[in-house]
Length: 185
Image 1 (tube, helix red, strand yellow):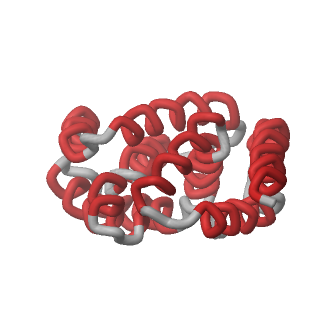
Image 2: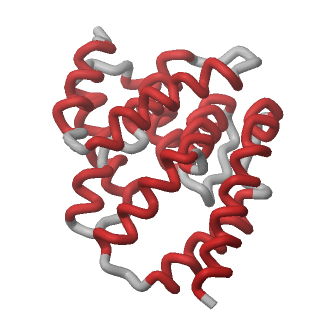
Image 3: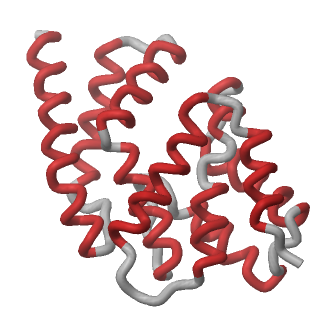
């Protein structure tokens, strides 16, 4: 029998960094703003809980976040008794949750869009800045990464409500990038 609280406990135990748990909570808040059609709530909830569960480990060991989160998610879904027939759906949501994701199911669209809405928020910009510092990359490389992200953002959202919610955030994000680029000249 699936125990949502057990899944949440496992995520909280793994996600020891400041960003992950707050990110997950904000993603659930964004879900309330953008959901409009019927969807499998268990799958979306598990996808939101698990899509960034590998953040601490991936940052510490310079690993791919999605790959790390997928590995942990498989283990956590099993431990929490998540229905076998839905596990692949949750893993698909995680696979498609990143900026370059191309989700095809309603559940994956929701997980993808709420993740990106938070990534381009003010808090998301702060997180990116801290990661830049931790990874010890040059400011110029950081700028180039963010410029690439900025270009991709225009086509990144799939649900109409997320597109609308993202408009102001994309303007803020682009303003930050332009300001940084101007100051680096």
